[in-house]
Image 1 (cartoon, helix red, strand yellow):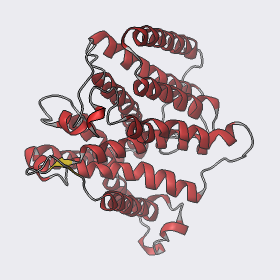
Image 2 (cartoon, rainbow, N blue to C red):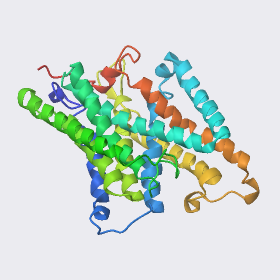
Image 3 (tube, rainbow, N blue to C red):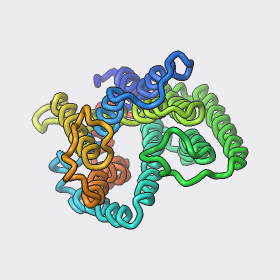
Image 4 (cartoon, one colour):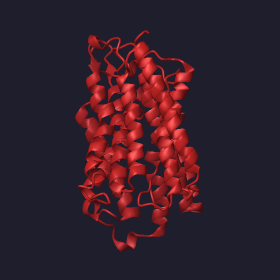
Length: 360
């Protein structure tokens, strides 16, 4: 960022935010548009699309957390109990639950994942609210209600229309079906929360000026969750609208916040972009390959197959909770490493490094 970014309502800059934080949600809708318009009849995600979206975006973004935590020596040494304790707890808890009942394991992780995906959208909204120097508690609550309603009501609708062709992890991981009648209340809350939030934003924009990053992030959240879940029941549409808006902005935020200032200069230092991208893609490919070899057996064209004499149930029982450790740790760590308080000294500087919030 340059000095022209001072006093901005953008997290990094208009160009960076537009490309990496805002565009992914709308790009995912453009990708899904041919299916939505009936031009392209596609059901399951093709092997290539699965590799690009699930492995190289969704799984890879999990591994970018390394640059915010384990690959940051100062951060790693600051709270080792967190960075080594959480993976241990994730594996131990996952192993116990999966051993008792595999269906419970997938249901538990599905709901944790849903909360994680929704909370990330609220996190970006919160960053934009901070940049606008908006600290009123009722506005924060209104933003939270809007985000959780915009994503949560479509998920509730999903529960009333089970079984469906789409699933979060595995078929049957959500509890249901729930009575369809509850959607009468659900859609009323949906419309009311959306109307109140839009009314507030229109009034606030007139008084304090527009906050395009915040408003477009909210719009993308509502559109992707509604279209991906309510409008269609197509695996490809749900996958693209689910993972692109989640994985790309997160990876970009980690990349941006992982920059450091050298002690002897005022210039910013970035980790090598090839290392950042290459390491995360490689680890994602390895992780998903292990999943496929031991559990799924769906993508032999990418990962090959294990000899039949190695395919034992005990291998699955150990592999599932072990391979879920990166993802589960990522879910839980996000509740700690992005807090804008004393638990993360210097985080505001890392994210809003060369800029300051606007004064009203």
